Length: 132
Image 1 (tube, rainbow, N blue to C red):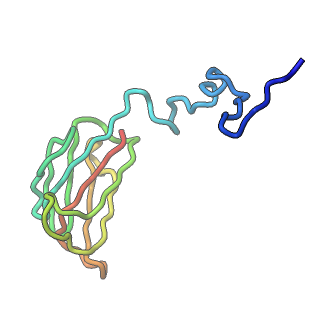
Image 2: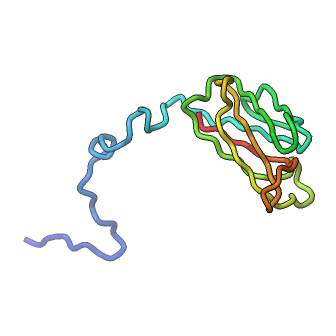
């Protein structure tokens, strides 16, 4: 009676079945994304013009370095990610900083502020992603 020997090129057997792995998955709760989750985005020029987006209704420059981006649905429990960047594929983006937060009084809006590297408000083109 010989036992089969495991060789180096054979993966180790996992003690977990697919059902056990699925049971460990994070359910769609306040802390996890629901199955219907979407990534919305906007690419906005320094003057506030919406260049392109997905689920984006509008972009508006409110003042020097301040913008409002409005999306197609409520973003109250969403996550926002912004980065400075030109709207095209040519050129170099000026250095600086960006801050993003939900827009007070506008549940489907995001308030964006852009700054120079020294922290002074400045108009900068940006890319904004929302996990909703």
